[in-house]
Structures are given as C-alpha cells and as structure tokens.
Image (cartoon, rainbow, N blue to C red; front, top):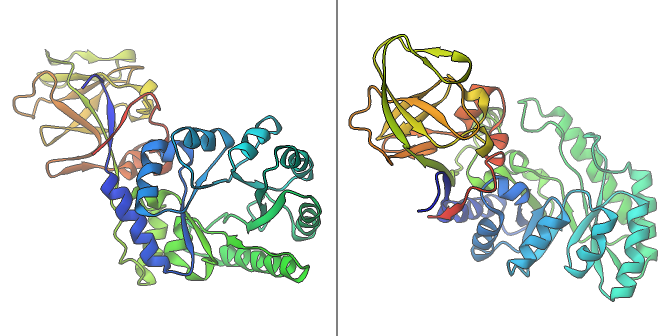
Length: 379
C-alpha cells in the first residue's frame, strides 16, 4: 500500500443499509440514496457503483459537477441534483440528462432554449418552501413557476419536493408535521391546477425511520445509507415508537500507520504550544495524519485512536500532517503498525459519533471532512 492514510469502505455494509431502507419503506416508494459531498466522505464513484449494483434506480447529488463526475465514471442511471445549478452549468446538465431542482424563474428561462437547441427533454423538481427557509418557493409562487414549466417545450415537471428543518435534532416533531401538512397542501394545489406530478418526496433518513406518512412515492436517504444514525434524538424517538428494529452498519474505517516510536522522559512537553506535559516515562508513536487530512485540530489532547487493539490517547496538538499518541500501555508497538482513527480494531471501536462528541459537532461533519485526496479502498 502506497499511502500514509486511507479509508476502507465496506461495500457489503452499503448494500445492506440500502436493502434495509428498501425493507422499511416497502414497494410503494423508490429509495433514492444521497451521495452528495463525496458520498458523505465515503467516495462517490465507489459508493454509487455499489448502490447501483444493489438496485438503486435514482441517486441524489448536490451539484452538476457531482453528476458529471458520475456520468464520467459510467453511471447511466437517474441522477437528481438537489442543490443549486449555476447558469454556466446548465448546458452540461442537459447534455448529461440530470434531473434538476428548480425554484427560480430565471433558471427555467435559461433551461428552455437549451433543451430546445439540444433537443433533450429535462426533468425538473419544483422545491416548495415549507419552513426551512432555505431553497424553495411558497405555494402561490410555486404554482406560477409550474405554469411556466408547462408552457416551455422540452421541460417537464418531474417532481415536487421539500426538506424538513427540524426532524432529527428533536424529540418533538410538531413542526415537522406542520411542514408535512404544508407540503401536502402544495401537492394538492399543483394537482388541482392540472399539473401531473409523478414524483413527490420530502424525506431524509430520520423521516424514513420515524414517519411512514412522509414517504409519498420517493424517499431520500442520506446518512443512513452509510450506516450512521442522524442523531441520538432520532434513535430515542425510534425506541419510544418501537421503530428501532433497524440494523445499520457503519461502512467507513479510517486508518494510518505508526511512523516512529520514541521514548520521552517525565516532564517533557509534546507538540506545538507545549499543551501536554508528560507525567511519567512515556512511549510515543507518531502517526502521519493531521488536520490537513481532515482529522480535526480540536481533537488535540481529547481523542483516542486504536493500535494493537488498545485505545491510545492523542497527546499534544494535532499538526498539519502528523499527530502523536501515547502507547506506553500498549505492548510491542512497532513501526508501520496499523492505527485506526475511525472504525474497529479487535474489540475496540472509535465511532464518528464519538469523534463528533469530543469536538461538539455532528457525525456528518466528521466523515465529510476527510480529505478527498485520501484513497477510499473497497473491502
């Protein structure tokens, strides 16, 4: 292996998680995994290929570039862009047959002549604003934009969508149910105005786990695809609602190796800023991973890694390309021993949730910030 640090991706876990959501949802809705942000840090091409092999008919990306990247890798299935598509990207989007979310009249105006010139129809998903106040239009403006889409040859209203603001960070889902009601009223208004809306979707992972009434006929599943729960609140609610018989298998392990083993005397300082002083004769191992690779500097003097089946605490400040760990209690640590930053070794595990808790963030951020330059290797 030619790398100082790498991620191993369990393709069997990816497939198992996808099949688990298919089981939960049943035959009435399409399960559309979200592979944006480099598949939540797991490697977009690798994961997408595995999901297609598992039967995924539709994948969700954030931007046109991600869709083009998958097309270049040979993916010919349905791809839905959930984020903003800049005007300069629209021609490529039409050529690549990407479904796009729309909520601007200007985007529709720009797309219509492109579709006519290229003689390629394009599926559009109209985004309703139901309470997140991010992307989307209120119902009256959405109806006007739907009328514009209907008037333009080559454009097709393929779907209607929204996104929940507060369904995974709470155990009180009153607001989420209000949003669901607004979305249903928007769908009803579009149908009443004579619009055929083939696809209707509003879920994220938490909604799929907790609320079958949100399924409509397509569900978007993000973090759950990769074997992680959206939040502890989602898990608590699932347990209370007896919907916790769901098995999700984390797919990502992040590994490195020991680059040096050295003995440090009692009273010595370790690393930049002298933030840690040894209290005993200490054996240190140097690991060639740092914050450039995505291992957060805030983990300094907080985190543990795994080596030879033991937890080894990080000592001193995490550097740009290196970190130091205390292996005094770990027998026979040697040069090039495997170091697990995230994942399982022996009976020990460091989870994305544990890393997130140490630095006050969420598991999403932990995996998506692992640098793309690190190889994602299938296992």
